[in-house]
Length: 113
Ligand SMILES: [Zn+2]
Image 1: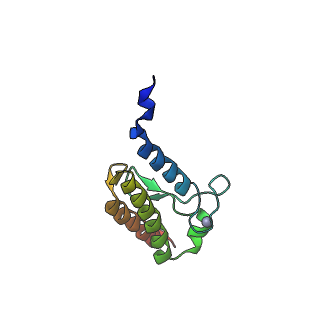
Image 2 (image 1 turned 135 degrees about the horizontal axis):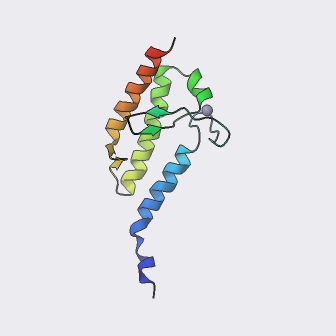
Image 3 (image 1 turned 90 degrees about the vertical axis):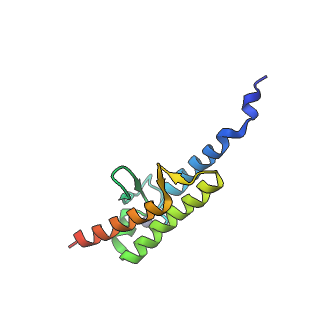
């Protein structure tokens, strides 16, 4: 009997993975998939990135709108993760990810001509 298959220890992980994939696979603003649109890569740390919106939307938004979508994505990930028993993503607390993402948005803005 394969009784180990009944144990749902892997279920929260699968749920989290599928959620992060589904929410990270399309632009939060226009809803277009990364299959045919280029995602704007936003680094929240040296090793971590999020992809809230496509390059097209990103170039049309102001700082507050960018922060809104970055936070929306991270909060959604936080909500789903904590349901699944996770309080961190990629080893980072969610508040730190938001802080890192906001910092990057302001950095991009100051570098833009
Ligand atoms: Zn878009």
